[in-house]
Length: 265
Image (cartoon, rainbow, N blue to C red; front, side):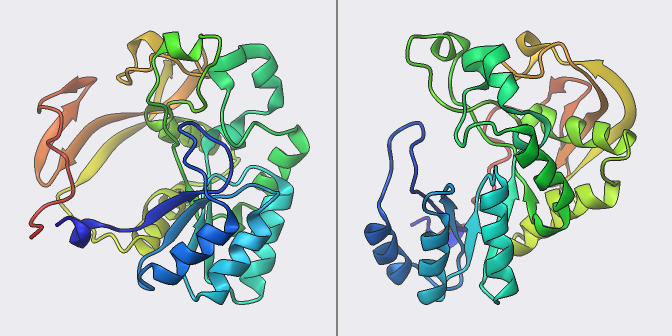
């Protein structure tokens, strides 16, 4: 059994890669069956987000709205919080640092769900950063060839650029290091009930400048909307349960070493 290692479940109510979409009737049944102590994560965009939040409240569930991308979506979350609903939300770096212009400029490399939005939506997210709970990196299990095909999948790699983008924003006085700690560490641990391990941590050079080269990223996708962009701040070392697994762009362990599911009966 792996149920003791589960920290939540993600449900898709809008189109994305894979087509694993449910309607709100099925979503209600999932909420009614899901353990009350574990959060339900949802991909719910503007057309369904209000109904989804209401269903979560009616079934007394802890709801997390992933990758908020527009003013309407965040306003809906803010309103629910003000009325005492048990709901949190996350935003990805690409919805903070890119607009719909990038889709026109980069084509399928910037094709994602939710889609990139106009500048006005991006400005609203920044002006209400205090109402956002988590910065999420997103994912992209697709090769560059797949992204450049006739039917490119949604998604972009974000893990290797997320912290650098945020630290660059700190340098430009758009947010603080304390904001990063809240959004990338404290709140995720609280929302998903993750126990902190003092021997698991990263070391960062906050001042190192580097240029994103998609071909040199560790992701197999080998693509990034920030290819060629200069960023400030770089992860230098990573320790997992006391073992140094990464230093200066080199791994010291085999894939799978960092699995967090352990001691499961």
